[in-house]
Image (cartoon, rainbow, N blue to C red):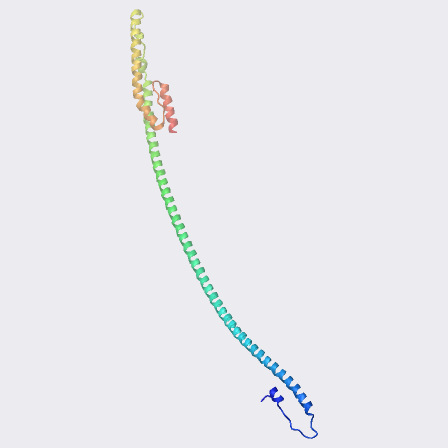
Length: 251
């Protein structure tokens, strides 16, 4: 059992002959008691400080454990967040890729439909144009055929008329009446010539109207078919001119 300062102070020794000086021993014991009390006080303070330090150490150990646990939890949470973010990013990337593939597929489908529609429309337009061109060529060939037939008929008719105009019978018919009257009938010749002149004017006007009426159908027909301008055919030169124009149009 440890000694206390009071035990040292109350300690008594027996007296013997030739022993230690009692006063000196008491003084020394007082010093020992004083120093021992100081040591005990320091020891108590040190125990108290040690206890406080141990408490603080225990607190810090607990705090360290809590921090370690928090770090572990935080690391685990970070790993979970990282894993979740990675999975979410993969899902987003996959969804975006699928969406992009779908959009590309739709765009390609629409482009194919537009291309097919355009090609179909182009084929229809080309077929219509080809059919119209064939129809126009057929109509043009028919018109050329009709024009050739008309030209041939007109040429034959004009040739026949020219042959009739060149006939010697016209020379005899167109002789002046005065050539049939003798030289001795001068008065009669003058009267007849005057009368014939009046009749010739009326006949010429009448024939001009007739020729105009007859010529209109031919000329108008030629004008409608080959574009020959309307003109009266009253002389041989007019007939030749009309025939030349028809030949030029036909060429």
